Image 1 (tube, rainbow, N blue to C red):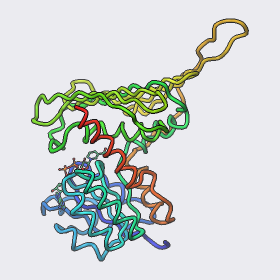
Image 2 (cartoon, helix red, strand yellow; image 1 turned 45 degrees about the horizontal axis):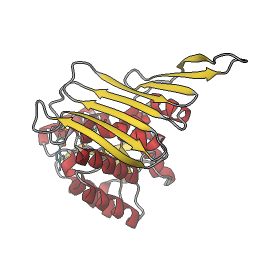
Image 3 (cartoon, rainbow, N blue to C red; image 1 turned 180 degrees about the vertical axis):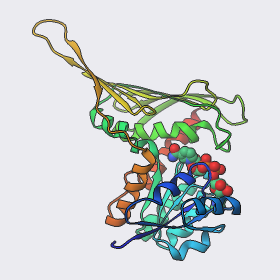
Image 4 (cartoon, helix red, strand yellow; image 1 turned 30 degrees about the vertical axis):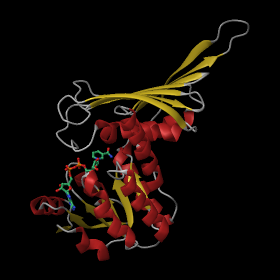
Length: 308
Ligand code: NAD
């Protein structure tokens, strides 16, 4: 498509306000509205970013080419589906939906109408992940930790669907092999939901991934380590740092390990995610993380939850 893209953000709470901030300054994009059920919230964010405020998503359907949906997960289907059915491209925050049936409704509606559907798996747009993923090839063992402080938000879902799903999506993007078995344990500490989770995933290739997520930690850690036959790749998502070490064969002797920090051009992952979405809408190419990718991550998260 040519011309300026008319975009609205639906749900401008903790995360959606940043969607509005970034879209309001993006080249070729007009942020024509923000929508929030809370009128004072909608008005405050609209004033801040120079756009119109609405409280009902249905009021903006005819005014937009694309929407980003950052309402609570349980509302994703009811909010996003009418846009998709009206032919409006949608970026839906992760997790794509509250359950697989709902995710299927979004994916099927988008496929049926030929409408672009993207999922907000922001970590895949982290510049450190973009640098590291091409360096990961045939991993044998993967260790991932995502530990954060108690959020007071997203407590309607288990930590698997709130935090661990980011890493499950990264795993699906790195290990080109089906998950054949899962062992998992979850503990509820401060909420009736699971606040700490650990899962050990075995892939058909033989690769094992050990993934830990916590939302009640004093430490803040977001780190993935990929162990391969001849090299080791380490990613610090938060610091946006990547280290790579490789085995260098020696004539007749034991190989030596060489490596160190790899250059990463740091940037805001959400900016890259939104730019990718806008470019996908403009050019008609698939989004960097599609609705189907979001559905696959949700499916794996559901299997982890069932294994507990
Ligand atoms: P939040 O509660 O802070 O904000 C949600 C906002 O949506 C609120 O302002 C609420 O009034 C509004 N709202 C609720 N129902 C609505 C409706 N039907 N129409 C319009 N507005 C409505 O929640 P949050 O922490 O910003 O999370 C929102 C979504 O973003 C969740 O799906 C969450 O999982 C996801 N999220 C993703 C990331 C990431 O890294 N990609 C990070 C945080 C949150």
